[in-house]
Length: 409
Image (cartoon, rainbow, N blue to C red):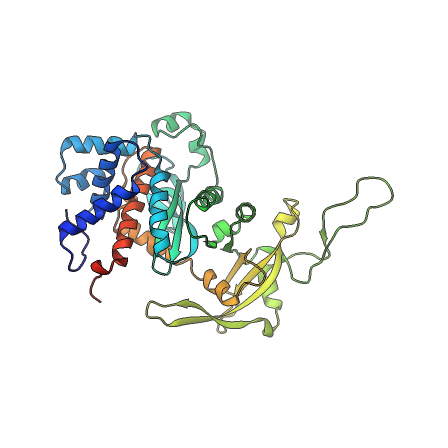
């Protein structure tokens, strides 16, 4: 086995640790052959080499044709629940990495043809353009000592969900229905919240933060969030009073919905009218060398307009976080957060600026572990692959934390 470079550790010892770790987290798989194939596949993902698709991976491991057939069936058709492995890895790694946030994001996986589940010409932020690709939504635990994926769901466009023939060929279960990316993300977060994981605020970009349903789902599930919103997002400012109007006359039901005493405004307009005293310079990021990066922030209590106007929900006060560096002509970032009214301002600023770390996670998951190398056309197989990539990622994270496996500085 060509292994990741771990200074001073014999290859045999590394193999034993890998086998021990995989044996620990695959205990929830009922069949012995499944557990054996999981180890073979994760060995291939961790091993140095080229493309991590199945055939070249097993060739590098010098596995037999019979093993290839067995692993292929294990990936594409074997009905083991991928979330069992994702959960086991998350519960093993997250307590070790000092989790400070969960990050929701999605990534595009370039594909040729039209038969891989979910593939179509669609916009991908990863590509920065429209391309033929799959998009998977994921949630990652971000800690001071590492990261760990804690959920995966392949996004299926409506045309895929409505096409019975394509569904059958891609082995998409009947119970899978169309869900937007924010709905998929909220479901993943709620599922992970039921596991034995350190709770942490959920961070997301504006593709999720602008979705009032996503924010509402998280809040109703008791989950904290700090999510990016666009400058056009509408809110009721801090001066707003919500009052239940008196009933007109003696007929009709008493009114119960509180109404605002003024019109909403965009978060950009609110930022532009704030007095200078509202702005504070705070540390918002710590570099790998330990230096603190500062920026200028304002923190305002607001009520988002959409849940009140469009969803007839009672007003819910939350934080609007605004970043406006001194040398910029306009604010550079806006976030909404349901964290407590007495939350420390520096923590709000640091959480707002933390989401970028998920890009480093995707870089490792794709560049080192072959997240985007799965070539099968099975919906189940795709999620099995993601779970096994998460397993390989978990092992490498623990290796980096292992004093015996430290690389020289």
